[in-house]
Image (cartoon, rainbow, N blue to C red):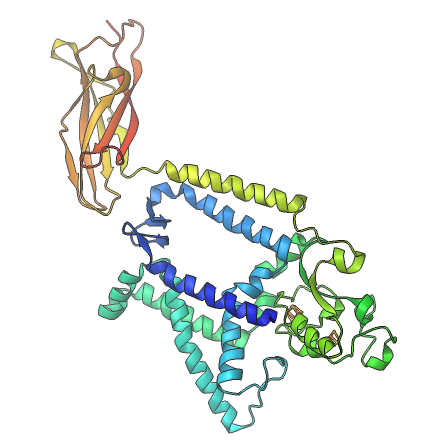
Length: 450
Ligand code: SF4
Ligand code: SF4
C-alpha cells in the first residue's frame, strides 16, 4: 500500500479522535478541556481548578519532549501524518480541488497550478473555497471545543451569540485564518512560518528516518554545491537507475527535489517514495528514494531505532508521566485557603487562648457539598474550633468564614516568649468524607506563661 493511502487512514483516525474527544466526559468532566470561563483544567475526567495548574508544565513538557522524540526517531513524521496543516491541505488540494472538482489534473502533480484564465476554473475555485470555508468553520469550532465545552458552545452560538462575542470572534477569526492559510499560504506555512521546521534539523541524527534518495543506486543528480548536474537519463552511467522522470519532484507538496539531499522543507510525506516506487517498479527495480536513515543509505549500517538518544527521550517521558500521575493523584476535591487574623492571640476568662482565622472555602465539584472542620493530630481534643459548625456550598461556589481556634489547656509552659504551634485541621464533605477531604496546618500562637 502506498504511503499516501496509509497517511489518509491516519488522517481519518486523527480527525475522528479530534472531533469526538471534546464530547467524551467521565463523571461530568472532559478528557481535555482548558476552560477560561470556568477557570478549570479537565484532564482524563478530573477537574483541576486554576489554583491547581501545577499540572500544566508537566503536560507541556510531555508534549514538547514527545515531539522531540518523534522527530529524532521519525523525522518530521508529525508534519506528514498528524499535523492539521497537512491534513487540511490534503483535503483542499487533493480531495476538493483534484478529486471533487477536477480543477487539478492529478494528485501526482502538485506543481502545476490550475489555469485560471478559464472562466470555468474560476467558478470551480469559488466552489472549492466555499466548501473549504464550511470545513474551516467546523475545524475552528473543533479547536474551540477544547476551551469551551461543546454543550456550552452550541448553547452560546445558537441562542445568544452576540453575548459571547469573544467566542464568536475566535470562531470566525480562526476560520478566516484557516481559509487564508489553506487556500493562499499553502505549504509556505510549513516552510516559512512553522517554528517546528526551524528546530527539526538540530533534532536529527544519522539514524533519523526520513525520505532519502540513494545516489549510489540512482546516480548523483546534484554536485556538492547543490547545483543540478544531471537533467537527462543519458547523462548518467549505465548502472545508475534514475530515469530523470521528475515524478518525485512533481509530486512533492513543498516543491523540492529530494535528490538534492535532506532539506528543511521536506515534511516526510513520502509521496516521492511512492512515486519512485511506481516508476522503478515498472522497470522491475527497487525505488531509489527510501524511507530510511543517512546511516543506512550512505554508510550501509542498519538504522538504530533504539539508540542512546531514544532511550534518553523515553526515560524523560516516562519520568514526567510518573510525576504527572503522582501530582494528579494528590489532587484535592475542594479548596481551602487559610489566613491568620492580624491579632496574635486573645486571652479570655479562665486563661482561654483564642486565635482568629479567615477561611476561604471553594466547592470545585459538579455537585453540592456540606463541609465540616475538625482538629486532628497532636492537638485533637485540646484545641476547639469555634464559630463554625458546617458550611454548605453549591457546585463551583466559594464562601469566606471567620473562625476561632480556642483552648483552655496549658499547651506550653514558657515564660520567655509566645510559642507558635502547628495545629492540623481536617476539612471534609460529610457526604464523601473519604474522597473530599483535605488537611491544613494552622499556626496557633500560645502566649508566654507570665
Ligand atoms: S521530498 Fe517532498 S514528497 Fe518527498 S517526503 Fe519530502 S515533502 Fe514529501
Ligand atoms: S522518481 Fe525516481 S526515477 Fe524518477 S526522477 Fe525521481 S528518483 Fe529518478
